[in-house]
Image (cartoon, rainbow, N blue to C red):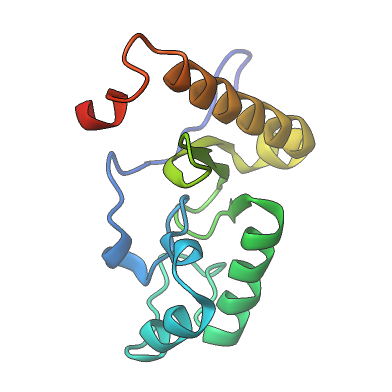
Length: 145
């Protein structure tokens, strides 16, 4: 490719959790108790969008435990080939996760800068949470979502 040219991957504009066996950037299974999550995952076969996505429930359960422990979810080309993603939760006034925030990049750049991207997404999530808490409607901002 010439100077300034770049390759781009097709990234769907919206991912729905049920489309790919709970494999999204926000990893919805992290909000569910582990036993209930495992039961849901074993109820039907996991589907894979790419060759990198786990289709083994035990592997996915280990990933979900890592997410619970670290608060950060990763996608290394598992949903969209050649695209990496890091995501974390945005916490509400009582510490509950009310939304998620993610950052994606082409895999080559994502792996080169992964530690910095994790710091950035965590920092941005904290800033969003602080802005929500400091909004002019401190008790009512959640009602507007």
